[in-house]
Image (cartoon, rainbow, N blue to C red; front, side, top):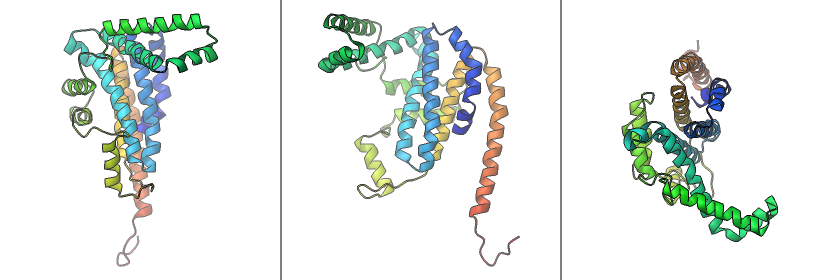
Length: 282
């Protein structure tokens, strides 16, 4: 699936990018395009780590993909149902949180930020003061429009949004798969990044020495990420009433990808299976 999504990205882009550009003034379109592109990039990178056997590092990309698809499905599908607000409103709020996070960064590193404005942009102290005032005002507006100081949705934590997505899956997300995937964010074992639980899991599983690199193939994470990226494309297709086209496109081309995999598996089996001496070779 990740190979399929990577191989056909340009064809999907050629189909939908003109539609995106024609409606790009809408906040929900900007969010759909940005998160779908993020998923496409993550899905393209995941097989490189998975095939090399770096399980935990593949999971880091998987977490990024999950965060992207939870935000996307919540904004476009679940949020309007749960909160009674439009996708456009939720998308504007999602993007506005960037102003909160940016103001926090500028405020924490005030001296460094001022130096960067001077060096990189050639701004005067007066211009910098005006810029910082604008940044502060944007933060105030974002907070007034529903953002929290530490997340874009003041009403729900990210874990709660993942739970709501899990319980209100769009029709194109296979129910069993969706419930399993989104449970990663609503259980206590959701740590898949560089924290102590993740590192403890890695050492316990691989039994490596302190600085020894040991690998364990975990290519199925890359396959799951390919499915997640397909969900994003299906959301775009639904938005532009092109679901029928996308379903036909996927069915036709995925069949080719599956045939390739079957043939590759046959060749791999032929290379690696060694018959015992008492079975005559054919």
